[in-house]
Image (cartoon, rainbow, N blue to C red; front, side):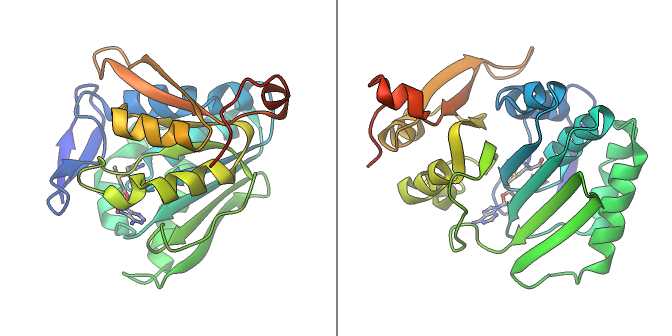
Length: 243
Ligand SMILES: C[S@@+](CC[C@H](N)C(=O)[O-])C[C@H]1O[C@@H](n2cnc3c(N)ncnc32)[C@H](O)[C@@H]1O
């Protein structure tokens, strides 16, 4: 893994194994905030004080989590954050990314690093809880995300942040996207940087209403928001039936 500085001054990693960076080189922080926090509706929910449950596909450097948790903690809105990850990065790598400089709340990273240091280098597949308080919990589910089962109708938002469909196909397969659909609450949103036609069609076949929205300033032209049908939309015949 190599550390890269992205266009907005925030750092990310480059994975030699996947031949890809963990975030957009045009701005790691901008991507996290624009594509995931705002695109998924999580930022609005937290600002409005609604307790929020998020599912992230690919915890990676923890940047999406740290920025979401910072907003939740600042506003005092409860956040339950579940992240799926196959290979948890070492604490030294997380620290080398200098996310402490991005965060006003240094406790967020300090607590994550202590939690990581207490785990073995390669934690066995399973669920590990990093609790900050009873209002802010991060649950890491270690192992191949496609092998675990997901709760039904549980999450307000999914951050689909796998590597690209070419590099990481199992996390964009039709069955896995179907499991993500099932895990969302009605009207919940899946946000992603990936707007590929094949992915949009797979999402739509599961019943998502798929839209593209403008990407972050200086970043990708378009990013993706896919919304699960809500009961009222189904009653009005406004949704595509799930396969
Ligand atoms: C683009 S990175 C995620 C970036 C992350 N959201 C962040 O803020 O740093 C994709 C992540 O998916 C993980 N991953 C790849 N295949 C996986 C699989 N089958 N199951 C679980 N995690 C996987 C990788 O280890 C990597 O950390």
